[in-house]
Length: 464
Image: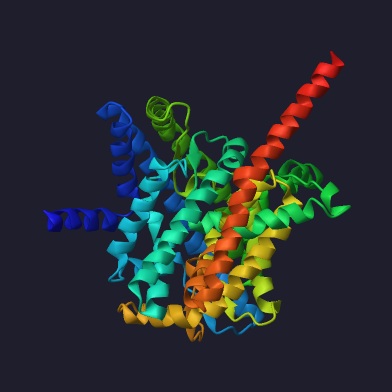
């Protein structure tokens, strides 16, 4: 029986998100009381939307990745840690001998937190468990202690679900997707730095008055501020800087313009497929948990098609490459994950309400943190990949591998460091940091919101 269950689980994971997502959403829909036909249609619609986005991201990576690398080679910078992309890291993760223990631990944490009302996120994005699992795998590889490895992934799960809860209101308000949270570490991790940076920018005189939105950019740039025109310009510029001829550069520009136009149409399928599930989940939660809300935890791919996100990401790509060249102590060469920078910036855009100025400042700051963490953990990640028999093709003379995922992400790096450092020091520090965030979002922020509403009522009464 157990072997059959594990074989089914292995098959589901191996099928990938485009197959796994419709199945999981269908099961979730049935659980929340939808009829089979409606549940299956919702799942299939989400699967189609994901497949469309994946095709576009692959198309973007196939075109933009080599062009970005050519631009790097043409400028002549030599860095010895190569970004091999999240796909390579996911392969390392799912090849680990302890992956089964970590996946079930993460799933158990989600269920326990739901039952104890410590989270409102029901994470159906099992495919992206690898972001939480890789931290435990790297801790286990360094410490040779499976319990520390499981502990690291459990902490990643707890904190990821809470960040998903805390960021859900801004996601719903900015992107217009109700009843959804995004427990994708590659997206939520950025908020660990973005939240305090945004708070700081709001308190710097002069800086806090700057509010440049995409509409403002389009207004000032006129014809050149249009999404497809901006994609054409940036794509063509990257091609020319990479040494491409004018024809090939223009082809790259048209490809980037196409991505900007088509991705929003694909993401609309997520909303269409999700609405029946979201409504059923709310009805179910009201019956089972009275007035409590449940959020369906999905892949952050549902929001990367937003025009603000894509535009900011396209501008951050060349800036991130430039940052890697000038950042003191950095050895990491951005490459394979350049095309998925939209995931890293998506929640920052929601946090700043589309403030283009803040997006660039915070985006560069979080990219710098990723480059440093990627540089620090590259030797361990390189050895880990070899230990599970995965040979990652290394190009450009790079000696080590890294990625813009795994423990390069700020959230993941901090948890990894806490579990491999001197535990009597690092674990208490980690607990204090988590407690500060928890207290702010669970106590201080709701209280401030209530006080603001009460002041508004008092003002309204006085005016009457």
